[in-house]
Image (cartoon, rainbow over all chains, first blue to last red; front, side):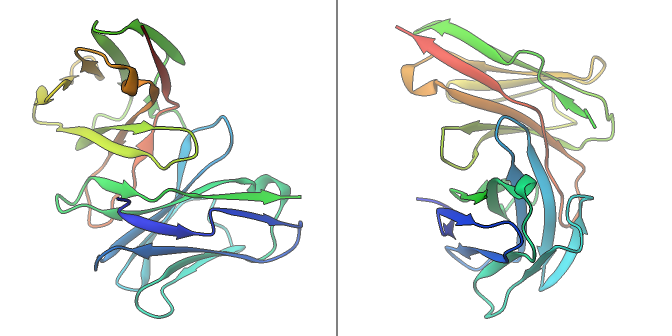
Length: 113
Length: 113
């Protein structure tokens, strides 16, 4: 059973369009993360989110990206104007009880054409 | 940024034998090291971790060894089983309230009959 669920599993969009990727935790958690993996490359940290605020973000997470928890449950990653290089697998993760391990969702494959 | 390095992109091991996956790191301040297993089209699955103050952690068939002086860790799987065929990521983090995980590039493990 996944620790978090993610929707959609695959999103195809045209360059310049906005996309919203969703993450739904199975139970109540406070710390969430977004990572991405471009095909053939490492899994890269994008942003961490705690108590409805960004805790840390990477240099990848520029002004085109935003995160929010609009209804206190779903956790979303928005890309305002997608570029070809945004094509990747995007993973949501939540912190474990130990405070250091993280449990990942199944991912959303984003394809920008 | 090559803080966590996995120099072997692939490894093939016979079923029943020991699989040894290696990882090197450069940041001596890392607090925890983790191993994740990833199947195609799925998110990374947390496997095992080790604190920087330990040199060994064992969980069933999986053992992680940490050599801080060499900045090296390894994951041992014994005996190797067909279901172990996957990509294994070494990862590390600096512990804080919303720690980001830094991943290596992964090693593809293939277990042959």
